[in-house]
Image (cartoon, protein in one colour):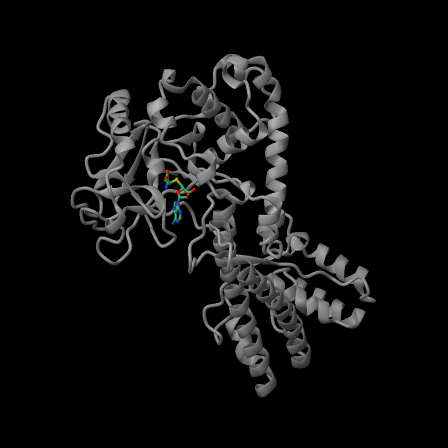
Length: 468
Ligand SMILES: C[S@@+](CC[C@H](N)C(=O)[O-])C[C@H]1O[C@@H](n2cnc3c(N)ncnc32)[C@H](O)[C@@H]1O
């Protein structure tokens, strides 16, 4: 979901999963999506309905059209940085408090806002034209047009089995099933609204919320019209919420010509997150990251000592996935941009773990513990004094990356064979997704190789000490 920026208050922090973070921008070329833009006839009613319902002008600068990304917003007049391009009052946003109190009162505390808002959508879907929200509800995509991995079949999911997204998807599907069980009694209690609502339909409504709602002071909100913005990870524009004026608004951060598609940034999301929540990925995503798991091997004769040392140096207050506290969860690696730079993109905590893994005696571990105590308490954050050991630690990481790269290449190869006859959108998504993760892994592998080579040549870690 999207995270809504706030103007007069700090933005609410997005929990692990959920909602969008609104920003906008258009690509550098002029009229980037103009060729395929056409006025979206289905939405003519929608705009006049929204204006009427809110009693205010929503936007005189944007029009609704279609692009490769589905429904989209285009500049219909010249737009300059600082222009307010859209204002949607809270009164025409859908939130969990739109759920009828008689339904809300039946829900347990464990039922989250996404599930509640999904119920609101299901209710209005059933009401059809009788719903006061019909013009908006009818603009929402059908399940057949949505590609979040939660909708992928087991066969399709196998295509991404190699990535941590596979397990994330299974976990998320299990969560949705749990939520479905928690609201099932409400479905049964109100058959006039929910008869025939299956898990499949609930999942559809659930993902409509996840792919189009913002976290707000009302919990989670669907913001009609604003949710027609598509995503560009390079964009800088936000949707802001003004609790005082009770409106959500978007301020342009650059110039747009009439006909340009206005794109926002939903958040600094990896492709795994985009694919899970929104059903697409962006090529060359600078926020892409890959989960790498490295553990202390069971057969290591210092297994217990190493685990103990690592856990003693875990800082519980840090929930950062790249802290040693997240050992069970792996480490998130991002693209390493320069093969000779500082290796930014590979978490320091992962390199620290590799240094610990390479220790072969209790004394070496003891030295690391003492060094940590003399510094900021963090373990193995500087290169090992013993250059051979430092090289060994990074070679260990390098071999882990090489292994993953081989597996990714194999997975991609098998997809290429499968795709020749029966290419589908999801296969293409799987291929692009895995290629993006492979790119990240290769960049890290090249850096590690270079680091080890330099260390071996110079026989010293002096330069690197400065870099870290
Ligand atoms: C908030 S909605 C945006 C409006 C949407 N295009 C529609 O037709 O209603 C988010 C959805 O738009 C599509 N989308 C947004 N940005 C995209 C992009 N950069 N590439 C591909 N699809 C995108 C995805 O289907 C996503 O789930």
